[in-house]
Image (cartoon, rainbow, N blue to C red; front, top):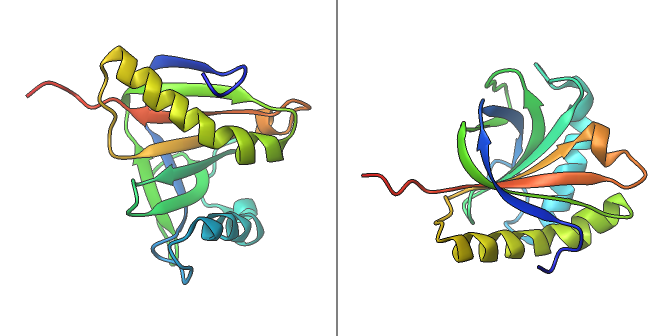
Length: 162
């Protein structure tokens, strides 16, 4: 495993996670990796503190729709949208979950976030699991603010049932 101190496991999400925020496809930003940081900055400066229906303690969520879109936002109590906002629901079901921590938030998202996806993919392949068409980064604000910040990622397991 490339991500030091990571835990990868099969996980059942009992209830959906709703998120509301901003969409890269709905922004004026080019579809490039550098735009993701700009989109997060916009969420933090324009929306985070006034997000309608935000859960407490706050949980930030990033969702990749596999090269179609990337969304950033906060977990909300129910699906909601407003002018300029996008929403996504992570459905209840079976996932591969990768949990990890780092010495700083920068190390968490700059260094370990990429390797956890590689580890999740390799672990799923070894288990004979096919992964779904989106992935989610979950940033519980009560854990990312700790001296050793932590977060987790979810990738749905595709059903093999007809």
